[in-house]
Length: 96
Image (cartoon, rainbow, N blue to C red):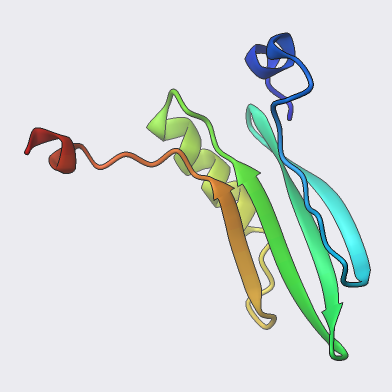
């Protein structure tokens, strides 16, 4: 991850992809204050794009910018999974 606070905490913080399927492509994408990983897998002669993200935990505005940047890399003609820590919070749930 490209985040100074996390780098100070050491090597146990970050994102990764583990798979036993063939990897066609692996790419790091810079999302404002953090990075994402785009992995393209080959499954039964079909490609699957997987985005692994760890969005900013302090600012919703930054998360929105990160998400917009990420969506520029999504090929809408291919099956895609976006996963990771999205750091979303619904305040209405906390009020009850």
